[in-house]
Length: 220
Image (cartoon, rainbow, N blue to C red; front, top):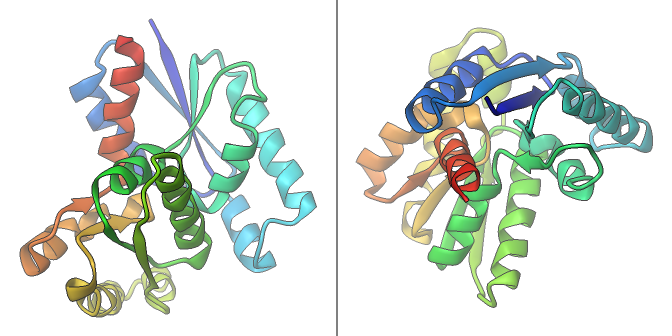
C-alpha cells in the first residue's frame, strides 16, 4: 500500500479531515499520514518572512516527515511553499505543494486570476507560483491578489461572523476584475459556496485539487 504524509506548520484539523475524505474518494488504496510542527506558522508570522533559521527548521521538518515510511510528502501550507519548491527533490521521496495543482490549472486556463487569502504569507507565494506556471506555459496572465486584513485575527478570537464579513468584502471588490477565484489557504474552502453563488465565477481550492493530482500521479 502506498503511503502519503502531509506536513502542517500549524494544527489544521479541518484540512486533515478534508484531505482524508478526498483520499477515500479518489485514492482509497493509499494510506494517509499526517504530521505537524504546530508552532512553525506562528514563528513565520512573527518573523514576517522565512529567515535562514526558519528555513533550516522547515527543511528539518520536511526531512523528518519524509522519513515516516511514505512514498510522497505534501506540504499543506502555502506560507512555506517557497521552501517546498526549493527543496522539492532534496528528500528521499517527492515533495509536493498542496497549492501546486490549483496554481497550475489557474495559470494554464484563465487570463484574469484572483488570489484571495487571510495571510500575506500565503497569498504572495501562491501568486508567485501562478506566475511561474504561466511563464512555463508561455502565457501572460493578470493576477489580482487580496488579503482580508483582520480576518485571521477575528477567527482566532472566535469572531467567525467578522472574519467571514471581511473576506466577503474583499472578495466582492474583485468580482468584476477576474475570471476565477484561487483560494490561497486550504482552510478557505468554506467560502467557496458564497463566492460561486455571488460571483458566478469558478472557485479553485487546494484540498480536492491536490488529491486529484496525486491520483493522476499514482495512475501513471
